[in-house]
Amino acid sequence: MSGLQIPDSHVEHALGILKDGDSARARAAHEFAEKQLKTVLAKVAQQSNAKAVSEREQHALASPEYEQALRDYKAVAELYYTAKDRRDAAEAIISAWQTINANNRAMERVR
Image (cartoon, rainbow, N blue to C red; front, side, top):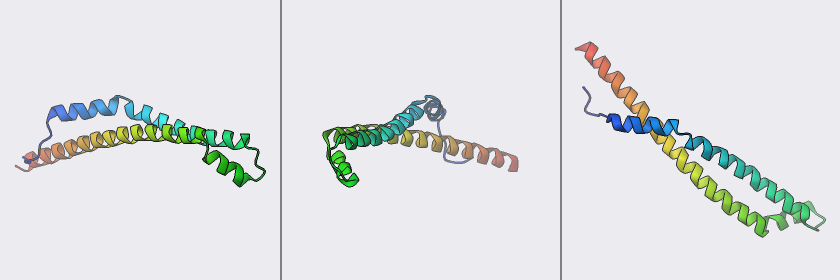
């Protein structure tokens, strides 16, 4: 048998993470916030009295509404990437556990 073992409690916890749906909700919120950022930029640019498109865009990029949307996006992105990292770690635990078990079964057949 291999010296490396993953306790059942770790595997169960990892499976719980994969099943809980937090990552999916965080991803949906991230995608929504990304679209919202573009929407805020477009709305503020539309409200500008500037004639040139580039001037309207500059006005929108410097607006308090867009700055707030950026802060909101950053907060949502942090939650999403934290949830994604957590899910990736859970998948790695499950994958390692599967490999260890397969190797152990193969070693038993060899003996």
